[in-house]
Amino acid sequence: MRNEKGFTLIEIVAVLVILGILAAVAVPKYMDVASQAKISAAKAEVAEMKSSLNMAYGKYFMSNGSMPTGGSQVIATAGLTSGSAVDIGTAPDIWNVTLTGSGTNVLIKVNSYGADANEEYTATGTWIMPQ
Image (cartoon, rainbow, N blue to C red; front, side, top):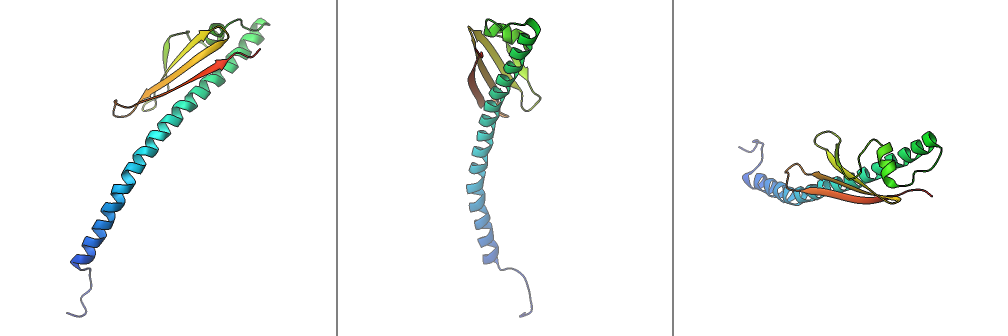
């Protein structure tokens, strides 16, 4: 009997308790990290929309030889409609983007629903037309 090798019941229980504690601590941390990643992705989508508006502004200027007079002209040059929501991206990251031109500003609103359809990720920003 002295040469038998293996783990005792107490050792196995101790390992299971340690794994349970690690899982109880790690899972909520992981969920928080995933949520923060979606929030950061929404903010990145706002930045992407600002970049698209900058490109549309340049395109309008080059095509017409003059600066656009309002944000709605820049939105139209980008191929979008002011005030209308557009879905951008592919599943699972489909972003609903609304651009609203008001004078020389464009309000950008981006939202997406989480995988469980109960959690919404939203970010907003304002693009200001160069003078």
